[in-house]
Length: 596
Image (spheres, one colour):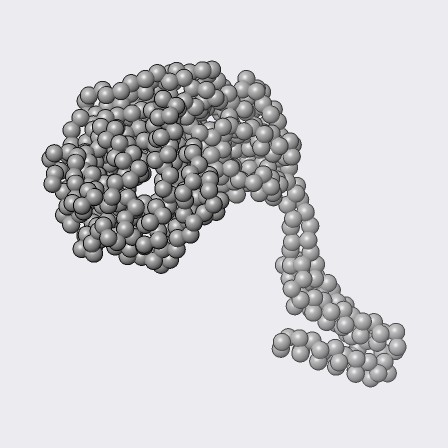
């Protein structure tokens, strides 16, 4: 700032001295002296200004060349090995950046470049992006089969390639994505009563199988082979149902496995385990009613026909005496001592046939894990006979007959009760104070509802015509299959094999083996289209494996680069020379005129 003030003062002082100087030396010489003084001041001002003069020059620099090689196992073919050998031969005297990638990316030296590829992923897009942003090569050669297990949008990669001014070329390798089988089993955990069987839905899915491949399915319990089958895959899928019957009470652990197909390397999804707990006793049912009726008679027959049920039927004689029959080990039975049973079915109860104490005991039985079924008929509805056993308000309304029964879609019980005939005595049932589920309905009205009551299940059946299905079958000389299946399904649904054994069941060792998902290298199909588009957009080449040496030979290993150059005026000699000439000329003119 002080120098600028001095220059301004000097300029003003020089202008004010012009007239006195004119009187002594004349107008022409005074103008020349003033001009030289102002030129010197202007030159000094230029030296104080941070101005510079720009220029350019051309220099030769090495071309930045990078090579990106896929190390994922899908490229592990003889062609890849030949490409690596050719690359080593062509670049043996050259300095090139070489990167290997699979799930990770790492730089490598040319002599230790691996010919084998065993990576478990192929993060192609990420590898290209990292190499471009970190090295900004002029030429990038990508050697891959096009598999990308974490693909990124084409636009992002193209933008980064253009920003780095990189030309990308690609060597497309043949792929070697191996076949793979994946096994799924449902359910993986089940509980049974003694004598029952469990059915497992088995599904085998295959990828890259050739034609109709046969797969071998085996089921083991410890070291014992309990089932085996040969499955045919259709469109890469094979399905079957395996039914197993445990031979003793307690936990049973089964291992399902499919043998690997030729060339399959990932077998962690070829096996799965399932656990089955079998109760030490059969399903025990107590069937109770007042005066025997047709529903009671035919329901008892359906329960008798199931060999895995143990049962007791309780009804009243005309004089009111209770009459019992059934499995000797369960007799005598009482509605107030229900511990031996799993399900209690009360057929069309009325208030004069059962007592309050029995109703409380049955309700407590359901809350403790038992199953409770209450059916209705005309007399039971009119007398509210169900109220002892279900202390919940129910809204019950008659429906027109005949009524077509329709299972509720998505309901656990409704899905098992299909193709039922119509009935001519039916009521809609709606519990008023709790959430319930509908298993059967007529129109949109529920006629069979159920809900979870603490540890057990409770169901209310609002129809009194199921017995007619058995009569109709008898009239035709057929077995009452529909009626029998209906009652057996209903009883089995309400029964819980783990009743009273919750602690024992909770000890099931988790740790069941489940299929491990194969690495993405074995599931993602190669897609070279993205690479071809990027290569075309950046002006690169799509090379055949045998063309690698020719590509290396055709590279330009140096490039001409225009380098900008800028030099401040204060670092140049010309301003100082001009200042010196102006001051010297001014001094000479003044001395020539005889002025001091």
